[in-house]
Length: 350
Image (cartoon, rainbow, N blue to C red; front, side, top):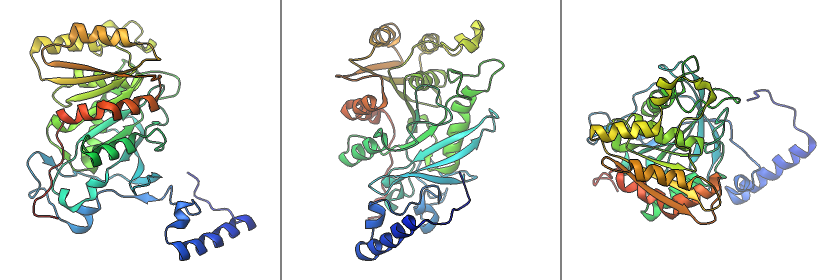
């Protein structure tokens, strides 16, 4: 981000003076028309607990984990029409040693005083492709993920999830399968340990796995449901859209033992043999993309015992984020909300 400021041009001065007039005459009109911008400014979340001090660790409801700190430094990257915002912070993982960006969005309910003592469920949202240096779910609201959660929460069909949107790879050239590939950056540890620890440090979350889930598209879908099967004691559910089923990074270099430890099929078989914990996987597949056969094969072979699977078919859906958000609106958000823990309002606060 550039910190220096250029001298205003005549055109910019005209825009500024016009913006002032709009602001005086119409309040928020200048912001509506984009003449002022606070993108890149520092932003904080959790105003209820900071300003009103309505909840402490001892006052929190059962299973609620108040922010552990230290607080991250966020900058604003987007605002939504409802006033919610997306912020970005840079995280250096204590366990992985990897440094990358993480985007965050919290629903309006998070700053509602009646939820100040409650935790919120976390949906770790993962992109397809390289997933580096940006996460397309977090760089802006254009794909509609944040709005889908907000609309679902308002209608009662979705929980008001906190969205945590990290980068998923260590560079722009390689797929790391969301795994600790020998000799490579520890992207599995980053995803399964450092990113959740980041969420716990900054937000009111839940101590149990009932408040932790993944959603992802393509490579991000693989990453998410692989983490779920590998760490069922930490996470409960995943929405996996247009996903691969087995590891495919060439960086494994034939390291079969390490690759098998990150293979969803083998992880599911191990979980079935162990008898639990129960996990929930919702596959999303568009009718205009390939991959349905692989998902249905996985469901037939491993969707039993503690491994619960379902399939959301997106009519005319393609292999892209907008199609997958539509599928979430059409059923997957409601599905995952039924198996996750939601926030509890304080009956003493109106």
